[in-house]
Length: 380
Image (cartoon, rainbow, N blue to C red; front, side, top):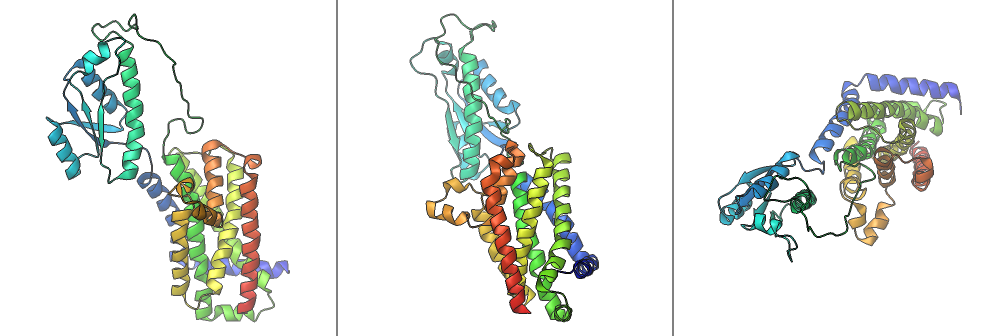
């Protein structure tokens, strides 16, 4: 391999990229837009959800419960005069979830040693499964904490000390070791790196050789003394540098705009991302070398992106998939990269904890680069 020829090919590719304003805008703008959009649109935390309330108690205790639900900003309570009006609002889609506070709420909480605690009904719009599941966790935690606080105090006085004779029991304390606020934004930010570096790298690279072949420049390149490996490096290195820069920009935007920084080493995260960029670029070159037109290359990229979103764990948890589908997900490089990015971003994991995933990524990288070289050789 001749270093001068590789340098010449790299300079040629850089100049060709810089002369194409659409490609430059795509390389910079799309990652930023995807990062901001996915972190907001696909975030799993509950914010500003309209909560229907029917308060049959109309007591200080029920008003306290509603105030606690509204305090965190997760819910926006809206009162209704009857259960029928509340259910009608759910049918119309005016509210996504609702609670019914019983008329004996205050008396039931004030009865020390009561056989059963008061029952608060919670109604969900079952058509919105994910939304209902997320809201359920928030409502349960808030209602449980509020009910426990009220039950251990004398509700008929303003004395904040625990009431005498309050039944004892085991106090359960839970802690979230990672992402203690249970904010869904870091989860989506970390996954967005995998989606962008998988989809965009393949798309940009997939049309490069096809366009050059249609313009005749790739045929001219084949007449030069450059070998297939040198041509491959001439394609991978410039685009790899651009996408590595994209990684740095995405990390900065996620931190400065969204307030999400990696819990682990930024250098380790950047190094893993740079290696994965080369893997994705190699896959794009394979699509490009096996396509007769740019449209065909784009179609292959789109078909590739469908399992990327559905099966890589980016949007849907792999553990909930059938066992056979879980095996298929292991054959997708993005699956392992997204696991690594989320482990670094949310849990602060390092190489020792992630070596099985890193080994899988390295195997995919070596294999795809080798296939790309063979494919280019067959096309020359």
